[in-house]
Amino acid sequence: NSLFIESSESGQPVYSTADTGTNGSIAASSVELSNVDLTEEFISDIGATNLTEALQYSTSTQPEMDDNSSAGANPSGNGMLEFSDRFRVRGQSATLARNYFALRIQSDNYNVERIEDSRGPNSVLFGFGSPGGILNVSTKQAGTGRSFRKASIQVGSFGSHRETLDVNQTLLQGRLGLRLNAVYDQNNDFREY
Image 1 (cartoon, helix red, strand yellow):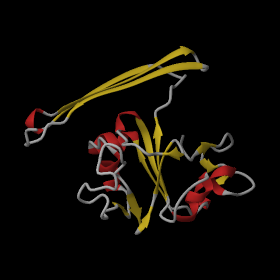
Image 2 (spheres, one colour):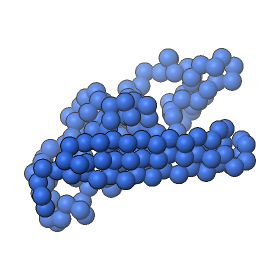
Image 3 (cartoon, one colour):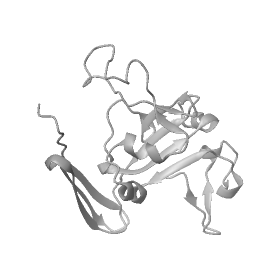
């Protein structure tokens, strides 16, 4: 899911043909790409629970605030049916994707491995993109190398709490694995509905 592929000769990260648009693999240090990768560890460290919170730490990226999204108004009048999180990169609208497929629903970070911000011309290498680039959310995948279990708890104001579970089980060493991600999020506010 990462843009990097380990080279068998030197162990240094290289970009593959599909990533660079060239005829072969070349060293990552030789490619001038405008990418920002937010890793799972970084997202956990800043406590971001959704895409909007995580992208506050990406350079030149901000939520798009226009007539349709700034005050909660949208063409249908129903905020549950419309994806209100849209972003601009360097002032241009950016395309949202999940595993390089168009993303049209809210994204929660409980099952996110990394968020990739490929800007400008580099975004068109992945099939669709806009002048602002592509913001891709890569989900966690089952690993076949080792089994592990992680749990986390976050506590907030007004009785808010969030629990996450991440379980990876190797079934056949190096061949088959199973992964379960789960979240329970009770987000309370000072308003009583």
